[in-house]
Amino acid sequence: MALSFIHCADLHLGTPFKGVAGRFSTNDSDMYEILHAPETAFQKIIDFAIKKKVDFVLFAGDITDSVNANWRSISILTQGIEQLTKENIKVFAVAGNHDAMPNQNLEKAFKNATLFSHEKIEYHEIPGKAVIGGISFCAENAAKNTAKDFQRQNADLFHIALFHGNIGGRQGYDNYSPASIGDLAKCNMDYWALGHIHETSFLSEKNPVILYSGATLSRDVNESSPKGFYYVQVDDFKNVKCDFISSSPLIFCRLNIHLKNADSMTEIKNQVRETILNFVDSNNADKYFIELIICGNTALDREIQEQNEEDLHFIFSEGLPANCKTGRIKIQTEGTFDKDVFCRENIFAADLHSSFAEEKNADFPLLKEELAALKRNYSNFIDFDSISYEELTNDAENEILRLLTEDMS
Image (cartoon, rainbow, N blue to C red; front, side, top):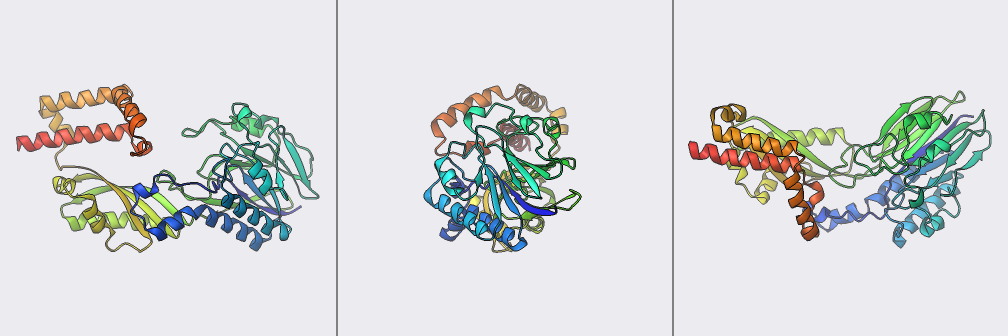
């Protein structure tokens, strides 16, 4: 009964990478690599599956970025599936919320493979090895707990459930096809191949294995965790071994640089460089697009605040590997003064700090109202998704306190 397979999800073929050009100074070569990154990651999956001669490949939804995927994405997907079928590697897939059923494009690409229906849970048996059950996502079932309806079909064979949804109510993701870990555990499956959450995550490591494989590539600076797929091996006793395989050709990330006792630009530059290189050493990719947030206390607070971003790019890029591209640089440094001590000794500063604290505790009502109005009118020009309410209030408070200390000095 020993078998092996690939579990992948959230490929998002055809993703437009909105806002990338505005966040990073990209040349034509960079943009070409970015726009083709989903295809590159997809081909890594195909090549790895063929090299390892796996029994089958599982796609757990959001294979394309849209129901209306462009012709190129469908062509790339079709060619990859054909490569697998020529090597006698079976392909099973469910649609996700991005490529939800009914979806003629997806059905066309999987005409020689298995794309599970959105109407009911279906089961396909690989004789002597496994049973794979799955149900595709569709808008009508978005709020239904369909995961709890999976049932074991054969006591002897290895059972896999292929599913796209939010298990356990993960924050930051739409609560599509919601279910609990307990719901999944009761279904008597051996392995849950999940999609929808872009970070790899074991919800259960055995009896059953419940695994989000995560996205196959980094799509923006909020997705800097390792991206790839899982190579899964099952022995005759149904013991499961899951190996993570990196597939993202590039990584977008946002790094926080906490300055420590930096009293010269050289020291600041060295600390920035060290943080970037540590990240690169810990994350495997061909190219890195990095946003920087410089914070912490430094005697050069005012000096660094007054630098223009182009000059900071020049300074911080020096000595970095050629495959590291710096993007937006946000300066959030503070002076060497102790804010808490200053607020205790200055009545105005104490009142100011208290006012900002009240606004934060009230969930930023005034700030959210203002930002909502700005977003309605200027969302085409400003990337509001990357704006943190807490960052804005902290920036405002620190700037006022900075000006106040300068006036008193």
